[in-house]
Image 1 (cartoon, helix red, strand yellow):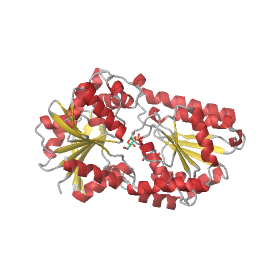
Image 2 (image 1 turned 180 degrees about the vertical axis):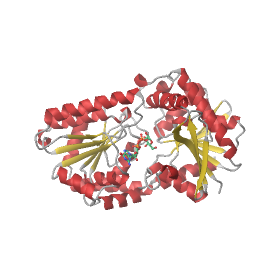
Image 3 (image 1 turned 30 degrees about the vertical axis):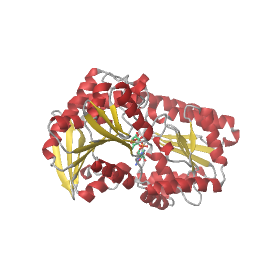
Image 4 (image 1 turned 60 degrees about the horizontal axis):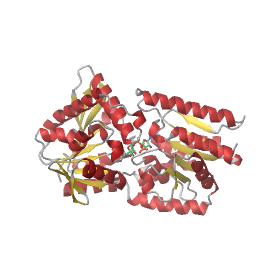
Length: 456
Ligand code: GDG
């Protein structure tokens, strides 16, 4: 079996003290790297004056190679083009997109730097798997340097409809560079179809077969590979966490009330302000929930140096403050908003003691929290999942109550039905979703993708 080389913006390296605490994606990638031996390459997370220093070290069968960036690289490539141009555009937030040309130049420069530093570490029969929107031009850069290996790409975020994509000044060259990959993996069939539509209608490409298109003489295969979670392990972790001190403290503080829980990075794509407004509507339209429903929103800070993220934080704080001021009583606060992160283990316990998981992104490639929420439930008395139709996960989690996050009243109605749902119905909905997630877990995702890459 050929060696696997994974490239992503950040690397979950053991030296950074993260072993054992990795999120689902890192667990999945590490399992593949351990099985076949391999290299994981990416930004070290460090900013240095010179940049470009590559730290290579081994840990068991895995080699890690992490690269430092300069402050200018960070500003232009990461905060700039990745997070202020591509992220808002791909999440349909043209109003927030900033297409400053300097960002694009930085993005291309850092991708070229990645290629030049990676190249000497590649072997002829490596299989290379590049992740996410930070690194779209990387395969093209590697090809220009003579790289012949199979190279796959997986996009973790949505691929926008062509009419949205063409707002990007360099949309043509971005898509051309994507065609340097052998396989492009998307989260859903909708994303894949949007990409094909662009290639055929806007870029003048041709369709070779259902999955393959040709553009300017390059053939690329596409597929939908919905990412997933480490289902069995999470379920076990949640069962263990259900009786820990922290979970007991949460349970004790909620008492016999209904706990509604949301966990998201503090990002404008996650629909947090609209979610608070929907909860407010629940209290307004169904007054029996006053004094009874508690909404716990965990939203750790994210990309705090990007101005749009500072703005959304202010908006969310104002919305939570307004609802609490209007409805709280001396023995009940409706919203508990926590602007900090918790360990994975604690979160599994929080999911388990809740009545409802409320996950309402305005746009989301997949949304792993929705899947994690399902995996963590008590099979005897599972909570209900209220999930946005604009999360990739909504295509798979058929037992969820699917909502339109722009429709506060509709979300409030769904919350009310979830609160009133019989235990039998909750069990029926949950077991269908849990069975699905057991079969379609993170290992199945990775295996399906890597097999398709090998078959291209
Ligand atoms: C991108 C795409 C796609 C969150 N808060 C804490 C915490 N988390 C964990 C969650 C989950 C992960 O972070 C977040 O994953 P999501 O999928 O929900 O969202 P993004 O971060 O936007 O991820 C997304 C994903 O990539 C994978 O392809 O699904 O659509 O946007 O695992 O549990 N973990 C800990 N403490 C927290 O406070 N430990």
